[in-house]
Every structure is written in structure tokens, then in C-alpha cells.
Length: 109
Image (cartoon, rainbow, N blue to C red; front, side, top):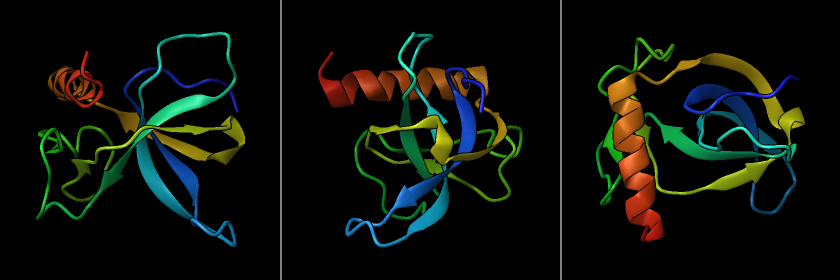
């Protein structure tokens, strides 16, 4: 699969912690263009009730190609592009700005 761009929404195979199976879940690509093949992603969830600091509900989740209200969850994962099932959409500029601020907060930058 060709490379994805920053703030693109993708469906990915998330492995279970015991690596016995995977589940398809949405995520946001957060890396800038780079020669490295792996993607840096942040998970998304429809469980919007109990969010921690820096997590937030997307203001334009429908415009990003998602079917239900969706929140950005704290976490950064590295995955191989083969785990990407398909591209769904892209974050709005304002949601992308909030995500970038959350990443800086989470990483202490």
C-alpha cells in the first residue's frame, strides 16, 4: 500500500497484546514525510465517555470519513504499512491542530 499522509484516517489491524489475533480499528497517521517505511499512528475510539488529558472528540468526525462520534486516544504506535486495511479520510485542519497540540503535550515538547 502506498504511503499515507499526515492526519490521514486509516483502518489498521491492531494486534492483541498476546499476538494471537488482530482487530481492525481506526487510527490517525501522525508522521511527517520520511524515508522510513513504518507508520506512526495514534488510535481512535468511539468510546468518548471517559477521556484523559489531551484526548478529545473530533469536532468533524463525519467529515473525516468516520461513522460515529470518535475520539483521539493517547498513544503512539509504529506499524508496518501492510497492517493498513484502507484509507477512510483525513482530519479537518482544526482537529489536526488539536491533535498536534496533544502530541506535544503527551511528549513534553
